[in-house]
Every structure is written in structure tokens, then in C-alpha cells.
Length: 260
Image 1 (cartoon, one colour):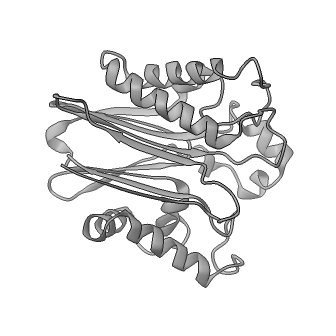
Image 2 (cartoon, rainbow, N blue to C red):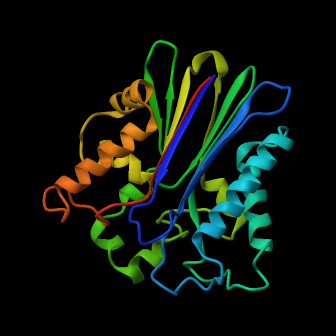
């Protein structure tokens, strides 16, 4: 089995709000992959005393533990329980009703001898490669359906956040887990899995350097750091977004790759 990952902050002046882990059970088959992309709120406006990195670390840890210890639970139930556990850890100190309470996108993959399960919530990406080299992108595209002009207005974006007709993230409401894109694939039909936060997926979605199969091929050949480096080079070549429009000049980028 091959496991490689790379993560880098979008800017040196602020912490990386992405979080990733791969867990393999002791003495057993299978494993778990988790990638989270913390949602950066306007400064001082999320009602939480802890901050987004604290939240993603708590939620990620709960997802890893529950996915491994409760293999009888489907992944949407795992996400629901992890959100509740994380909310309970700070509901006495923080305003969890705030629309910008710490939250994150989620990619969760769990595999065993027979099946590969997956869950995607919001705009991170999961690529599943079959033994013949075909690559399938698992996407939650609700955010893509919203005009970017609307998302640049804070009040409008807030009204669409975790709301009907808008988009959904893992925040404080366990019910949001039912909105995730989920599925199961026979293990024999999956050769590798690649999870990307949107900062890394820019190579495909923003800079158009290649398709999803090309993206996975870059990581397979040269490792996850190569993809992050290519994204950073593209950002540096267009620092003001004159050619490739984007909300941030540079974003946190995480790439996690597992060959099963």
C-alpha cells in the first residue's frame, strides 16, 4: 500500500485550516482517509473562541476514531456523530447558532476487503481510480451552481450557507450529514483514491492545466507535493487573478493519496 500526503497554507501569515489523516487498523484490513477544508470567516465574526484549526482538528479526529471503531455505521451517520461530538466540545463557550460558526468541507473514505465507501460534503474533491486507469470524480457541486458574484457578498453568502437552495458544510448541526454525497464501490474496482481541498483542485478547476485523470497522474508519478507546487507556480504567474479569477490569491492546499 502506498500512502502520501502534502498540505500547505495559502499564506505564511495565517495558519493552515486544512486537516488530513490516513488511519490503518492494527492487525486488520482496510483503512480510513479524511480531508477537511476549514472555512475561513471574516475576522472575529464566527462566535467561537477557538478558531477554525481547532475545529478541523476536533472534527477530523472524531471522524478517524468513529470510522475505525464503528464500522457498522454508514459514513453519513459517522459524520453526524462526529459533528455532534465536536459541537458538544465547545457549545458551552461558543455561539454555535452563528451562521459562520467554525465549519469545514469533508472528504471521507473507508475501505475494507470488499468495499470502498465514500462521502463528500461541499467543494473538496475525491478521485477514484479503477484498475484500468479510468478516473471518476466524486463532487458535491451545489456551491458551483451559485453565481460567484453572489458569494462575494457576505450577507448573500451567509443566507445561502447551510440553507435550502444554497450549499452545506459540516458545522454544528448533525443533520447536515444527510446532505453529503455518498456511495459504495466494490474494492476490486478501486485501485487508488485521491482527495483534494479546493486549494489543490485549482490545478484543474481554476488554472485548467489538465483534467482529473491528469491530476491523478501527476500525483501518482511525482507525489502530492508536486501538485501543490504546480498550483503555487500558477498562482504566482497570475498573482492578481487577471487571467484566472479566484476569490483568494492563494489558498490552503491539501492532497492525500492512497493506493489500495
